[in-house]
Amino acid sequence: MQKSKSYIQLFILFFLSFIVLNGYSQTDEDPYKDFLGTGSGLKIKITYPGDGPFPQTGDQVLVHYTGKLLDGTVFDSSVERKKPFTFQLGVGQVIKGWDEGIALLKKGGYATLYIPPELAYGDREMGAIPANSPLIFDVQLVDFKSPPPTPAEPQIVAFDTQGKDTLTTPSGLQYIVVEKGNGEKTQAGRNVKINYSGYLKDGKMFDSTFKRNEAFKMMAGAGKVIKGLDEGVMLMQVGDKFRLIIPPPLAFGEKETSVIPAHSTLIFDVELLEIEPPIVIKPFNIEGKKMYTTESGLQYYIIEEGKGEKPKAGDNVAMHYTGYLQDGTIFDSSVKRDEEFVFPLGQARVIKGWEEAVAMMNVGDKLRLILPPELAYGERSMGIIPANATLIFDVELLGIRK
Image 1 (cartoon, rainbow, N blue to C red):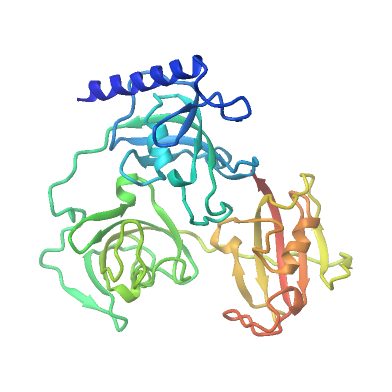
Image 2: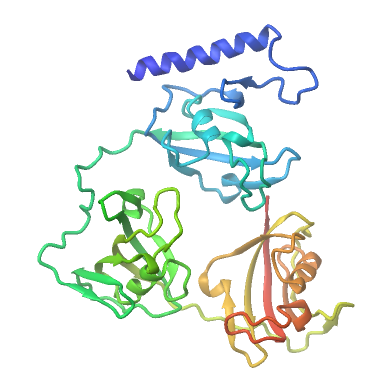
């Protein structure tokens, strides 16, 4: 059966090549006239087909890619991140054009895919991708491998909870202590690494870092994950293995995802692997530095000058920042999370003072910004930020992510 599918894929490629070579592809005005078309609407130009067999449905494929809009705007790139993207081929984990296009490459193969909206995100807007957008992807099939054998049902096999007590917190979270560790206790605001497997009540696994062999990093107690997982991790110490039974209000509630139905109770088997040392945030030293003021009222100090390029509107800029109230209280920090903050410049995704300041910076610059309320959140209160607050930010422009 595997050989038969490979022969069919080869036949499709040779047949489509024959059509193009005989002048029946597209008109000369079509910028994709050199691309091969498939019956679905996908168009592909294979630069190098690769070697060996084709990947099969269910294989774990490793892909490098750069995604662009028709005007050439890059909206995402694994090449820029220097980390290939892994997914299971042909099971709907990616857009339809990817599932079809990657299946036409062998290991090491390079291609450019033209994916019409109906094989991409359709009428949905996805970040920098407008609704009804055709997408262009430069892709390389780095490697692929067959998936591990499917475990027998039920799939909840990671932790054995037989004979263990189920405890309940006031919020409604249930948890089972499967194995006790003897390491450091979790504290709010600390970065932790966990392994987990997530299941629906019927035993269907929807995600697992154990299977990916890739730990998940999160800031404990910061509200960056679902409430039940956040609360459960806060109960743990390094080495602990817990089963968390998370009711819908502490999970996704009425929302549904591609793999999780609305109103779902979720089950997580969680192991706390590590608590990272606390990150000490040192405010920028402005002693002896000159304060500048712009026409808008933005005030800033140049702490350190970088030598990199200056971003332009539309660039995805990567920042580190720490935000302070005037009394010195930190209300947010990417430094503390050890996670760079990326946003597209000039698209009103951040407050006005940030837009103005970052547009003046070069990669490597470090500035202290003092933003009056009208350049920050104005009359709105945001968490611990009161209304009409003047905000102070220590910011560093790390790079421009193409």
